[in-house]
Length: 210
Image 1: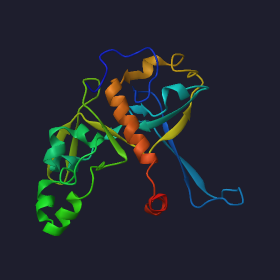
Image 2: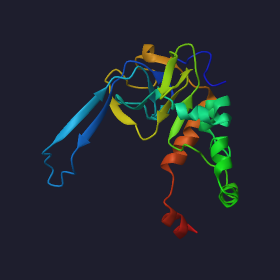
Image 3: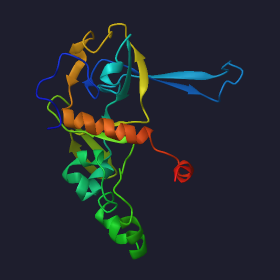
Image 4: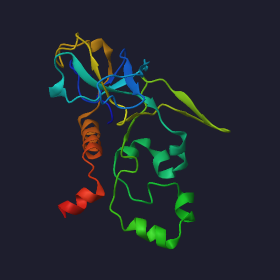
């Protein structure tokens, strides 16, 4: 089960919310003298957002959000993923991570090298949300290809802070903005993948740690 059948009366990590804006600061270069000569603030109002704050850290009007965005049509080129796009949320083998045609096009040496690697996340910065009647179906288009789907995703590279003085705690918040709540198992998957993404060490650091 991807979502809980009944939402709790509190904000929880991974909740799908509506009614919140998303902002991104854009600068030309770092203001080392603490004076920006040129900057811009991009404001977006996505239909849905995902709460990326741990439940115990929701306080004093501040939360972290990521927009819920359409998936990529290229995912459907991989038959393993096309059967269930939420497989992107879990580790997989090197062969499962690429379309069958791409795997067969590799040299035997390249396939052997990849098969020797341990299972890992094929898209370490993405988390896919299963379709639900509360999320509208949309059509993906690329060249002459079209695909109708109800799956969405979040990009861990696109998380921002938002302040709302109506959010004082998980329970004291605008709960009518909450659309869907993840099941305990799905919320753990999201937490594990998010921790893996932000905990990734550079190769040189791994070498020093032995």
